[in-house]
Length: 142
Image (cartoon, rainbow, N blue to C red):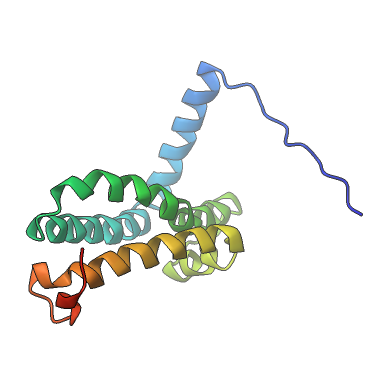
């Protein structure tokens, strides 16, 4: 039977916070085109979802769905973590490295993200008729 090892937490100081921000900025400067492109994908998806929610007259759902995005966010960070690994090894980053980062994501994180995505998909399927989408969902209550 394996023995459980408790995590070790480092003390967070103001200087360590500034050091982490500086290190992150330096990494961003190295990977700027790839980082901006990757982040832009999710920004555009977010705007499309926001517009869809507004068009469906579901404005009160904006904050719960945005909060729920925190369940998907850590999975999406896998791509950035893969880039950070490549930069740390002084290797060139490619978009395929971001995709490869997802293969290192834990099953538990993927399961949480999948459940959230399925719930949002179900909401969209049930209420797609409010957007004028041909989903056959008019018989469902939303």
